[in-house]
Image 1 (spheres, rainbow, N blue to C red):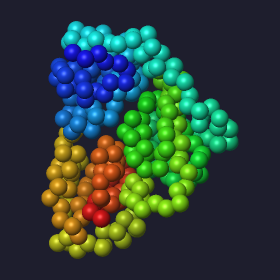
Image 2: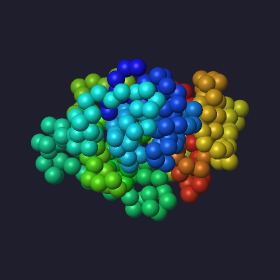
Image 3: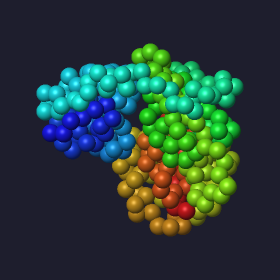
Length: 277
């Protein structure tokens, strides 16, 4: 079996030995989501061992402990650990003035039981090109990192303060002379109830398919939504009743030709409208 390092993708481990799913899931609760086929498909190809360790609040050494018995061999163990725990800041962050960085602590929002995605996207939208948004959280927001990378984040860096505090920096791209493709930021819109109703009115009842995924267990909601979108004709819309803003679904759709509108009305009551562009 090939040597692996902290930069090895989780998908490579699973391909080499499917038993690695249960081994990794046993390390920390956030990593248990790898047991869900849909979430595993999304996460595994994007996340490295080092990123998964940060995401789960564990270490590369713990990954080594459960993966070596499965036949994996870690290459350059000492440097791997250093890369994961004390990776040097990139030049763009080292040279940034404090005034160039917008520090945004989303922990109070999460502690109140709300999803900070709307606020984060709004904050990033107002971040000036060439400036930096820093999200302060008690875990590494891996789905958010990939979502913003697919649009206007030129680079990202995660700084581990301690096992309960992480600073995730997003460098916003400088304005380009011309931009032919629509960004994920433009495709995804958080609407108030009035503007959401206006968007929905563009489609007749016959052109709108409504589904309710609020009672489905994970990863049921995502599976059903993706299946419905596969069959959705051009000029039609999918109206979704959800109980939360589905970050992993948004990440999956970010580089696809869909327009996504979300109206987060209240706790447990999220309305979504998705249609092809």
